[in-house]
Image (tube, rainbow, N blue to C red; front, side):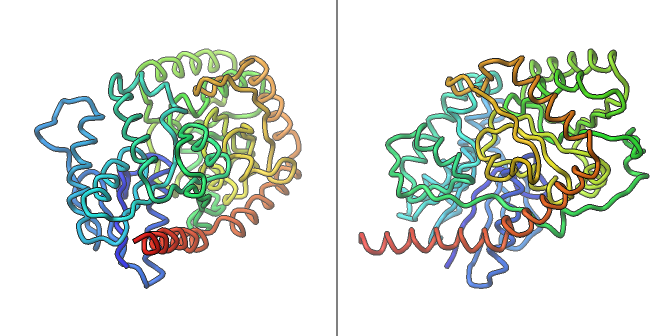
Length: 402
């Protein structure tokens, strides 16, 4: 059976959780041995068998990024001729999958990593292109043979955002973690090279600078941490100049109040991220929107307890009192995820972080419990098998209706 995977992100160009998901899913599916898995990714040609890169169309150079995306989608759809099933990831590739399905009568499965209605701040980044991306996503979801949600919370968001989608078509298959690639590996030289003192407690954040990640709330909460606690931010790829300026201003204010604030804006190799995680006391995920949060699994696999917002799919990963702390949040129901009471959310986040760094032995126990949970419940082999079952179910239903 030939499965064509359509994606914007694929090695060596990965900048978010969706790219990690696609990379690991493709590996797990190919390892099965009974599938012909071909990857069509945005960007330059790849030096990998069965994988094709699709460059932006020269005719759309300088156009709104949404239009540039649609140009690539046309080439993705054309390349899928002969596939038994297409599987697209994120709105960037969803239109390619939708067109391939229409052109060739090919079943289309898509995985929901995020939802445009839940990210209205993207209008800052895309302008009118946000209306285009929203239309693309709605069209693809309503036409897909199956929609894979990466968490039960994400499934609820899908059905709320797109009520015309048949609930029977929306399946939950969690994100996963490669527990061999992500495991505790201390490296004090690397940690010190990045300006972190391995002998002091630290709170670490890993993520893009985007509204959904809640970084401004964390920077406000960090002002309340005990003075000996470091804050380590592996944060880059800002969505807009506005969010970058806001983070920079808050960072400057925090550094005037305390030392031990380390900001690494560039994307680091995985080995260096692992070293910094292995040196930390606790991982923090202050997101206001998070379908699941692979970063939490990566931290847990490195034996870190997690302090995270109780939103989206995060409570399906982080177990309160066992592998970390869930920070309550009451959110405005306008799609932005904004806390109804931002000051309360910041105070609760600060209290949870302060509690987390107050007892080293407890933090270590929770970190070990997190590692066990990541290994036992979120393996990619299991997720590959579950995804293949979605494919088989779609093909069975297609055959029955024909």
